[in-house]
Amino acid sequence: MKFTYQLTAQEIEEAWIASQWRNVLFQRWNQLILTALVIGFLVFYTKDPEKFYLILCAALIVILLFYNTYFIPFSRRRKAAKLAREKGIYGIKIGERGIWAGKDWKFYSLEERKWELLESDTVYALKVDREIFCIPKRVLSREGTEALRKLTKLGKCSCRKIITGEEKKYGRNRKTKNSKDAAQ
Image: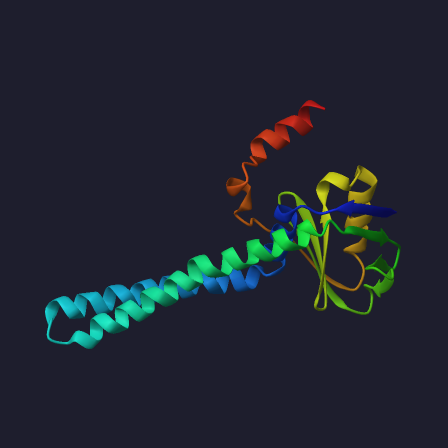
């Protein structure tokens, strides 16, 4: 099966978030730890206001927390929008032993490599070594979805359902989508 499509910025961003799910978990733990440190520094500063360096440390940690919370997603969103503006035509061909993808339709044998199939609300993200392939669910037919499922039996595949949090941001509601599918 061969699919060609254009990606939207939201699909690109969702594929990146899905493929970096471990980093997102690490980022959330970082935010929790930084928040606890800020609270600790502020508590110690209120007990002894003469230690001015505690408030400076708290301010530095707040800046790091701001960077971790807002700048990284903002940067990712900007890069995805830039990539979507180029309006490139993407394609992927699903075979029995692997996939063909990229501008030169390079073959990726999935039997020999460790790879992941990550499913989010609107995209499938295939992560083969360091390569990430985004396949929007809107272009897949039932046969295409089944072909992807068959690929998971090849090689060292781990298949995960990822909740990216982008569903709320872009107004996609899973209940509405599932009820539409059930009505058809």
